[in-house]
Length: 420
Image 1 (cartoon, helix red, strand yellow):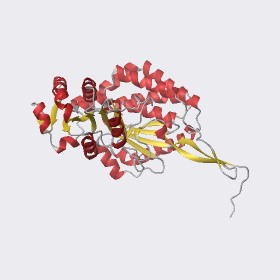
Image 2 (cartoon, rainbow, N blue to C red):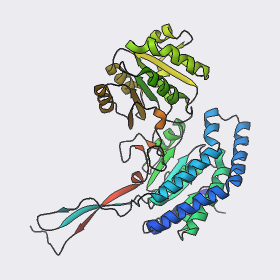
Image 3 (cartoon, helix red, strand yellow):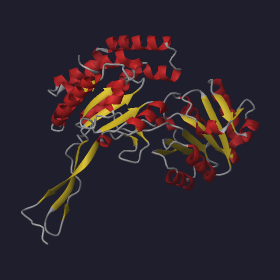
Image 4 (cartoon, rainbow, N blue to C red):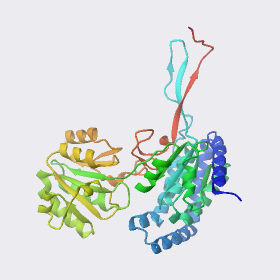
């Protein structure tokens, strides 16, 4: 009888074989596959939504958290975004084979770097079936093969999307095994995937802290990961307060479950009285529970006194922590102490403050006068993202096509020999 380990080894071998073909695939082939996937998504929309409805109904019965339910649901809009993302990625320049500037050495030898695929990428994710399309598209365009393991709560959606991906690959004459979706909910499959160093070059997890911690402890394959998105907006003393209110409201309420949602609002003491009461009314009317420091409570009586745990928490829900600070330095120090290195923003009209914030806040994305919910590869013009990395190596922030490639040195000569 075939064991799970045997099955995973076979998937790994197939992926490695497919990766050899994918690294040689032409830009035209890859674009053809992506456009075919976009067309299939459009024509098979009802079947996809039916499969997704099965997952959503089962998740509701299991009382899945609202943030996870939101991520699981494939709305008309989310399908449209997937289709548009596929078309955008198809239209992008092929990153593979591109050369850096060439340096000519004194002996006439030419030295350059060539962009190449990583190879085989294992992607582990929870709840979000749109990741199946995003991951497949980005890995395909960047010349990689991938093995996808979605959460059990999205199994029917992911299997329906896997068929669409396979149709696109076949239509372009590319190996069907270039994208494989693991079709078992058995968690032991993850344990196999993250230790298959002979078949997998990198693991990219997208999920909650428990998943990331497990993988960090057990994985033998290198990972590109982020633990959480404890994101901040700081309203500076020189902010346009109408703009600041809109940015903070959008950063919190756009979608509670995204990793770029604002979890803590920092406000300079000089403008707190002018902006917080009005903003608090907007947020409370939207159902957001407010927690704050003592100074915040004086301006917002309904706010619950915040604890250190509140400053450290990624709520992924309708809760916001608020702290009044004395200076931009104190705001930056708070982010350094409690932030997760994901995405943080300053609202200010003062150029010096904006420059200081972007220079000193050590996060993968740092904004000026924008809500943190823009933390998304699609919004950055990457077409889609494979995830948002808070690593320093080898990619940081939204990981698009370039983040799924590496460089090799290519040298050209005319018979030069190295002397003693």
